[in-house]
Amino acid sequence: MGPNTSSADTPNSVITKSRRTRTRTWVLIGCAALFAIVFAIAASLSFNPLPSDAELTSHFGAHRKEIEQLVKQFREVPWPPQVSPQWDDLPEVRALKERAGIRRVVESNAVWLEDPYSAGTAKKLEEVARSDGQRYFALKRQFGSIEVKLADPHYGPRFAIVRLSPATVWKELYYFPQAPRVSDGRVWWPTRPDGLTAGSPVLDQLDSYPKSWGKGECVFRRVEDQWFIRMCWGAV
Image 1 (tube, rainbow, N blue to C red):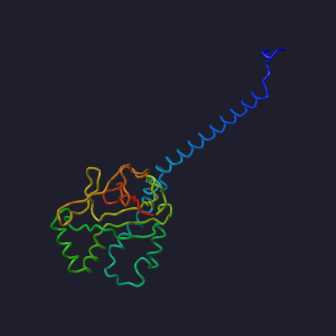
Image 2 (cartoon, rainbow, N blue to C red; image 1 turned 90 degrees about the vertical axis):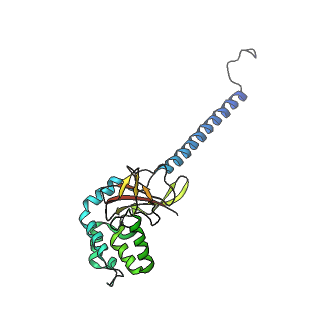
Image 3 (tube, rainbow, N blue to C red; image 1 turned 135 degrees about the horizontal axis):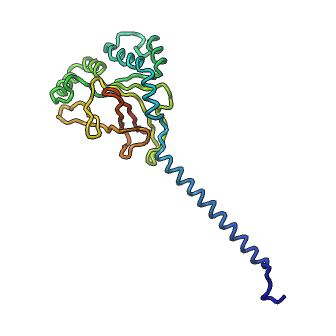
């Protein structure tokens, strides 16, 4: 055959095709790896490692009697505590917490006296705090909001990535001694002495991260008038 009529590939052309094939293969592998990394990052930004709202409300429904008994007992403990060991360590309390699946019951910051949205009430409470610390803490124990922390470690605190930032997140039950105002997507705290009232976001669900969630912020979901789920974003 003449030089221009051969149908076979030359050795050089075979080598060139082989190199091109390997190059295309590596490009495809690289693209797939990049896609996987981007997908993993996107998933980590939206993945909430905490149990669902439905799981928490189901636990509350199954153990409501014990949980409400713990809250009632906690609010009735005199201040300063007169028992030894502390209420938390009493055998009957530890047994009740174990049955309820609860790790701790602690008071939160807000104090809900009668007429909590009055600046006059806030000024009276401020005066008590200045003049009689023991009485103030007794009022806080009796009329304060209460955090109910579950024993299951899946409720946190847990490590998570929130908007590219390392964080600790947790969910808990939250009790208000009286039904708070809920409007405009917020739960409103007792009015301050300056007459201003702060609020925290109330959402329809806490299974995913809220779009406007900020570091150090807690968000709520209402279960009943006085019972809420609270989810918080803390620092690592």
